[in-house]
Image (tube, rainbow, N blue to C red; front, side, top):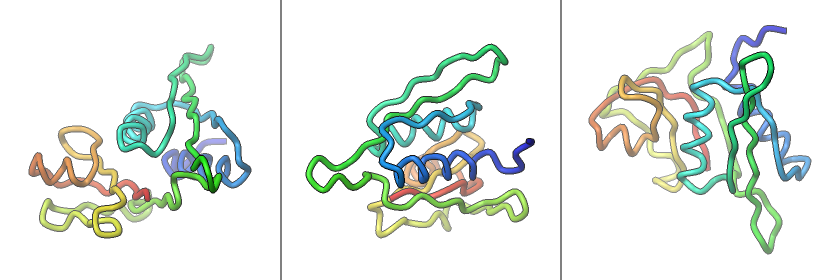
Length: 134
């Protein structure tokens, strides 16, 4: 089955794994998904990740999900897609949204690579809003 929106699939797999209280989720790899995974790790939303190669050459990303020690709730409360294949959402630097007053992050694809909204503002680049996390 060909995926029309691999990033939405990526987000859904993480959401579903958290719903089922899984420790680890495996996702087919791509450059874009690897970048998003690294951002989630840098921002402290996931415990760790590993990129593994497979026979078909695509590879998989193994993500260790992070839960609160006491409440056992997942660190990622909400994960949502902004720009969809049917409706791309591009924004200039001046319109990059702040997710819950800066507590969450917007992940963007810019001409300088995939980065958070805050990094995009710092680098003064606009781009495509991929998704948000908090």
